[in-house]
Image 1: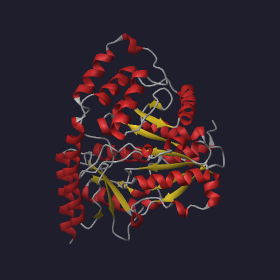
Image 2: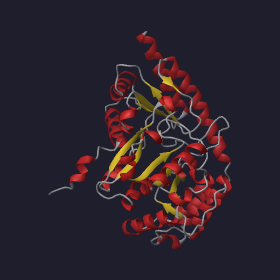
Image 3: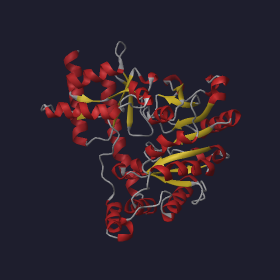
Image 4: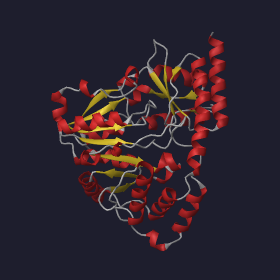
Length: 389
């Protein structure tokens, strides 16, 4: 058996390793508290589940779905974008439902990247941006996101010879893993850069609805001309706690929508229709749970940031996402420090190196943990800190 050489370039997916380690420790009877994975602990709102159950009983939804998604869902996505961001979309040409946004993020490189081509990828950043590029035969060029620049890319620092070989540029705000936010000015700069170098822009906007302190996150597509050169990926996972149902969307440039549809139509059979109907209910139904959910995450954020700062980990207070990006003491790698917390405190965090070279020196905590486990985890950290003083 001879496997494809491209697999040798892929590291194990970060959360697969984390889950395996947690399972091993728990199998030995260890009481482990995980702050590692950004999977909302709060359930999908009940009205969405009820609608899905009703749709599941309809035999029409037992058959193969269409890759392009139900027209009603595409229309609901377009309506949501109009109401939320003031962005007008043609549901027949500028909207494509996805089996979770990760699926589209991983496949879009197949539409643009040839062997030897580059994609501009944030570092630290969500791993599928670079992994999709590698699977397509290209090379990621990493744009450093550094704390002194508020974790924003510096487009002027990208050499012209790199930009000339690049086909795609990835952006992600609000940002995973740093929690950073971007202004419309940053998106305007990105569009100017993309036009200059004939690039397509892919913006991952999965966390626009997880915001705090009165902050409202913008869409990249709010900028005039954005649809001419780019698309935006969004998801129902974070907004409606539908991670397990796997449904998201790509919206924006009609040519980019068409090319990803071409790939998808040859690789998948679409989203189960009962889930699509539930997504319509989510987008058109009550949105009251979003503010209630954000209040819970904000309360958790404030408690955890205070605890981390007390033990000497420097943590910014994020205005969006449910992540805390904490700077670790000098003398440790992020993996070393994460192992230390696992061995000595019995808590799991995500080492920053898993998001790229620039992520070393940081660890990520997720707020998607029950209040009881949050309190236990903070208590362990504070007690550990007191013992070491």
